[in-house]
Length: 468
Image 1 (cartoon, one colour):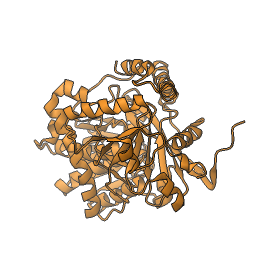
Image 2 (cartoon, rainbow, N blue to C red):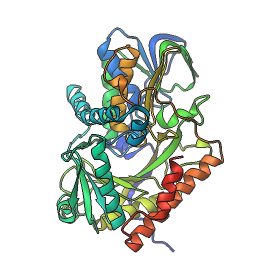
Image 3 (cartoon, rainbow, N blue to C red):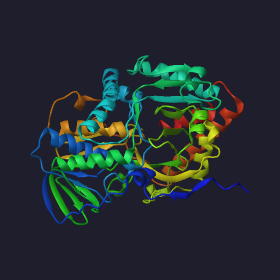
Image 4 (spheres, rainbow, N blue to C red):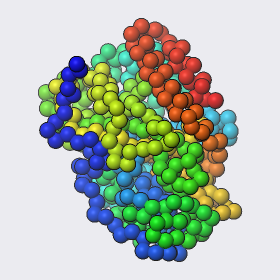
């Protein structure tokens, strides 16, 4: 029999996330009270919707803006993510370049760099204490195949706007001086990443937009978006522009079942680590940590001395379903703890205090998009494929420019008005996604066991399939 997992006496599974357990669940805001007329209706009170409202209201204070939210502000991925405010591309740069050119793709990347500092600027200006520390990110390689991929990634990113000071290789000794990852043979380092407390950012941003005069209606379910209207269970909101900002919950809208795949990412957070354990781990700063496995893990050292680590153990449920409470599925808890021990074996005796799941939106081409159909007034943003903490801010600024019809550099970025085909019907998409992740997991095990100098043929075949 397997040994029981070391969980604390206060262990919680689901209940949104540890981040909201830390800051406290917000007092419910009133629901929509009936039919309403506004200038802009925003569907979803996550980062995308809140940033869009913030920049619109800053640019044009007299706009009437309503944000419609089924649960509460920050309830979805915005309050459950790994807390990586990273400049990594919101999609695949080679696809943006193929569609809109290399120069436009480099411009997108440079905007992502600037976005990190823009988020920090707004939090300081609005008095939002989200425990942000910009100390960079370490991508660790623990076998030769992972190191080969890191080298290829660094070389490839030079083409798309990453200079030596933006993304560079470290040898094992340099990398271990930052975080003592077990069996690490090399790493890549970027300064363009900051740690945040996700729920604190969501709550603070919601309060900031309310101070500007935006109304957030919670407990209000939008069932349909139409030209000039958002239909809810409490009435219809008529608006010149309707913004769809639901990310992984997009499939809940009529007509959008196959637009973006709701993919799960699961997380655990430990109890606070004693100082002697932190000393052995060698993780003294607030830098973020990721590995180069195909079924990758991502982690942060929290402001209160814990390790929060995530990964995609069970990435998708048949029929685009999800568990709204955020409980993790199957043996995900054991898989995440195993990932933590693989990277940081000094945490063996550390207990897990909370586990939860969140969903992100994945387009069929794995590239985010922002857009406005001027003939209907319908706008959208999302599909950030895991890089939405920063991507949402850039999307919100871009949507504001589009809605206000401003000719700026942002509206010419290659993710603007990007359209892709829908996901396949069931059971094809379930078979494809589950099959791909099983293949990637097998490839990780083979690479670690054999020490092969290049990526497993299993993963290379899965990559080819996923790009079709």
